[in-house]
Length: 151
Image 1: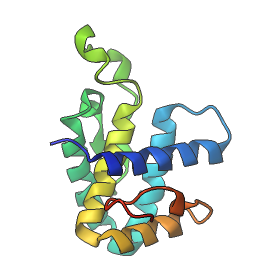
Image 2: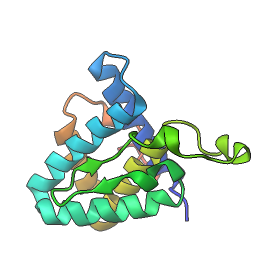
Image 3: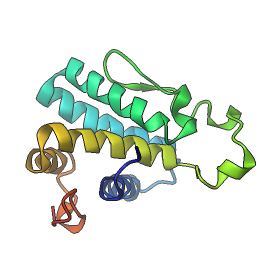
Image 4: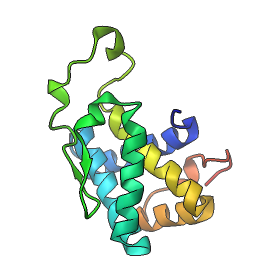
């Protein structure tokens, strides 16, 4: 099972927004960690640390099937990520598969899986409300929601 295109688009949009907001040439892993940490802080305050850790663990488990670079990543007890980007250069991906797993795609897949689970468990309105609180300056009305309507 792969991530839905709309959820992936929303994840890509959040990562791009965060990269532009940071106004630096951070790596994709750094931007992914920034988005992830903002989601972790917001959702942990909303649902609790244990609930977020369980959700993050599930999202990471799902994402690993699509992104081999995530096999070295772990979710800690407080829900933070350990190992994102640290081991990626050491992973030997078959040259035929290299085009299927472009650099940075793992971060998009991980965030998309997390957003997909939020949409499933919280629903579209509450998920988008949490995203608006987390990124108050973001024009989330410009990105499509899971159901194809404007957010």
